[in-house]
Image (tube, rainbow over all chains, first blue to last red; front, side, top):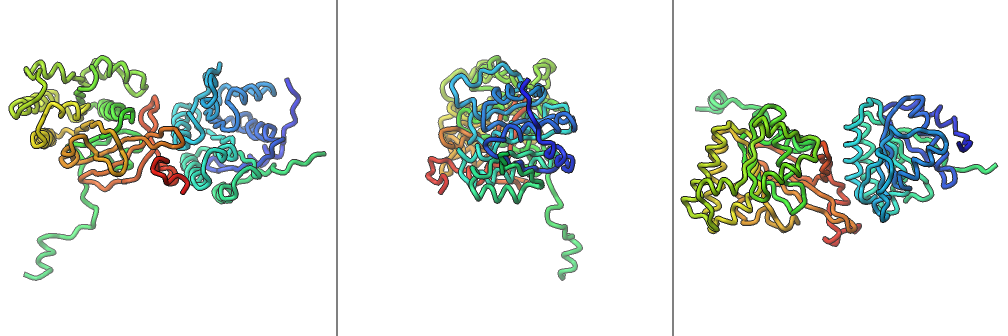
Amino acid sequence: MIMFELDQGIADQLTEVALNSAVQVRCGNSNAFMVTASTMLPLLQSFEMSGVYISASRGAAEIIEAFEAIGVDVSHIQFLDLVSSGILGGTNVPYSNVHFVDSPIMLESVLLRTLYILKTMDSERNFVLLDSVNSLAIYNEDRMLAEYLHTFINTFRQQEVLSVILNVPDQTPPLVLSNLDLYCTDLIDRGQVVIH
Amino acid sequence: MNLSDLAYMFPMQPAGQYSRDRCVTGVHGLDEILRGGIPYGSTVLASGTCGSGKTTLGMEFLVRGADSGEACAHFTATEPSVKLLENIRQFKFFDIKMVDSGLINVFDMDVLYSWLGLEKSSFDLDDVHSLIKAIVDIVNTIGVTRLVIDSVTTLCYKIKSEQLIRDFLFTLGKKLATLGCTTILIAEITSATENAHWSSFGVEEAIADGIIVLGDVERMGHLLRFLQVVKMRGTSHSRAKHAIELTPLGVMLTPMLKWGAMSDKQNRWGA
């Protein structure tokens, strides 16, 4: 197992949020995985939640392996992979908890697939983690992405599903970023990486 | 007679107080779009391009009815019933027991034609009337309250005159409405763009009480399915485009993103 130091401050901050919250988690390039893991772990272990992990930054298999390497069991998290369908043979993964959407531009399909997966889950306390806004911004026009985040956040807030939205702010268009600030109820800011 | 007398004879009611009873489709999001469902006894044209989800929508409409104990019928003209059932079995919402128990009754149009002695390339007035009578008799005998004809386009290809198609649809719709049967007529169209007709022959859309259009929006080389209720008599409804997803649990809808609702072929992408 890889030794890994989690950010306890994130867990502390998450104790303050309600199920119908939308949490923007800002991270940098270098600390993205540590911040993601520090966010996921309390949700899974302390709050005993289930959830859907929407992966637009990397293939789901790679993310699962990264979590397994730090000893996190994600077998009961459902992954919605927006990346691997664009790679020849990418959807051939050995995990039954991975679902695919053809492309990150099929934003409505991502929302509907997530709602479908949530319908199939037994847990009453669920989260949806979107990894990440900056990855979606590569493919989607600014106004459409801003509109989508508005719909996305409000849909899950209405259903009392916690939204966790990962974002690397310096790679996100200003229009999307300002809208995200407006729609989200909470902010966990680890966007500035301090190198000791 | 003054105004107060009129008020006594015709008491004023707040607008929107009266509403027709609804056939709740049970399709995720569709009843919300229709403000409660399809008005009972309506004949609704579900027009769509190939692969847009027409058959799945029609079948789910029947399954949701069967779930609540309604007798349903499906007339298939585009594919044999065996193939239709095999294709639909992949969906978790469908249970073959509904067919076995007689809640969903599937009829091959070819078998019906053969039964009626209508194995010919084109139908005349008498043929059309015997076809209407056969369908109505089945609906009446079984007590069908939800009916799907898939597709009315294939059926109408055999009716050569536009006037005869109009008569066929009008008479069929009228008789089914009298029996309290809510009907979805599936129609094949080649294009679902703004300038397209909602039916192949142009007359179906005028006769139908409602029109639901299904099609694709092309977004950067990917096809995104959409559904739009263009017309529905007897109810207010949303006329917005909705993205649809065919999931194992059934059709799911969400409003299509306004900035993504137009095909990039329409040259408005990101304008």
